[in-house]
Every structure is written in structure tokens, then in C-alpha cells.
Image: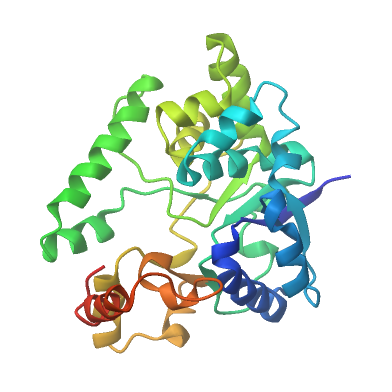
Length: 296
């Protein structure tokens, strides 16, 4: 029997320290004891189980998830870059039947205050959906001369909108963590993918933006009621965002009034890599200098 909601994270060995930090924050703040699941490649199972023995977490093999969709070619999946294959694994988690809704977390997430089901579910266990036009982030990008971020956002949005023949505003269905309901993924499969002879791997390879596939399917097929919300976590996509908040003396206690948690991008938090920060001495020094200047 499935639970109304579960927490889920897809990870790799490089992110072991980050997952430990995430698991510690869940143990500290998980008021309703929402079950927490972690999936990793089979080769990484022993490592994660060794270092998370004291945590209330179920660690599973990525292949267990994708094996529930017989139309996906595992060999093809394993040949894809990790940035794409992980999207497919995340999007297929619902097939395990563990929960109706799952909060899909990244390894670099951390909870910063107590949380409960009410933070994620509306009445009748309908999940909130992160959806807006991302104007605050895009405006901040323009303020620091990052026009390319706005251009990429518009191009990505229009690309998937056209596939669903949806005119109108360009929405952001993120950032992670996101609440995903099994009925929306099912509607995508039954009403879009299957009639076109596609599976989710085909879809994400053609347009590698899993959150947009979910969001556009929700808007098109209305498998659940749309209850919009702003991002659940404060996400620092870039070091300059963190630097801006640091200069404004915004800390986690203040952020906790608005968000359940925070995400610090692993690209500029390389000291958290397992087993140690990668790269040469010069590259490590360079990263620290760029971070100090508010740049990736």
C-alpha cells in the first residue's frame, strides 16, 4: 500500500558527503517521519550503505526503478551522460508504487527548518506544484549582466511548449526539489508518449528537461488539480547569488521563514566531493577565488 508522500533523492558516489548532510537534516527536521528513499548506481550501493547505516533511509539500485518500465533499454540508458540518465531515473521513481507523490531532491539540498506533509500536500493529498515565470531570478541575472540565462530560459520553455502545442506564457516548473504525482507521469505516458511510440527515455533525450515534461503534461492533461506554489527551497544556482545574500547578511534563520531548505550547487562547493575535492591544486585555488568574487 502506497503512502501519500515520500522523499526521494538520486545520487552518485561523488555526492556521498552531500547526501550525508541531506540525510542528517531530514533526521533533524522530518516532523511527520515521511519515508526517505535514495537510489544510486549498483556499483555505489555498498559505499552508501556503509556510510548511512545510522540513518532511516532505504537505499535502492537505480536499475530497480527503470526495470519497472519494460520499454526502456537499460543499455541505452547507461550509455547516456549522467546529466540526462539521472533525469530518466528520477522521473520513473513513481513506478515503484511507494507513494502517490514524491518530493524529488538533489544531493546538494539541505533542510533548514522543521517540515511536515502540510508543506507539500494540499487537501485530499494533492501536491503543490512549483510554477511561476521565474522573474525574480531572471531579473537578478540581468542585474549582473547574465543575459544568456534569460535567453536559455526562454528557449528551453518554448521548446517543450511547442511539443504540447501550448501557446502563452513561459513557465518555470522548478527549481528542484519538486513535488511530482504519479498520475501526471501516467498521463504523459498514456496521452503523449505511447501514441507517438515513445517512452520517457526518448522524450528526455530529445528535450532533456524532465521538470518541463512534467509541468506541460500537468497543464495539458490536468491529471491532478493545479495548486501553484513558489520554490520550496532557496536555490543558489550560481555563486554570485550566494555572494549577494551573504553581503545582505541573509542567513538560514531568515531563509527558513520562506523556505524549507536551501541548495548549494555542487559545482562551486567542490570541497564536498567524495572522497576529496577533485582537480589540481591550481584549479582548487581558482575555484575558491571565483567563489570569493561571486562567480562560478
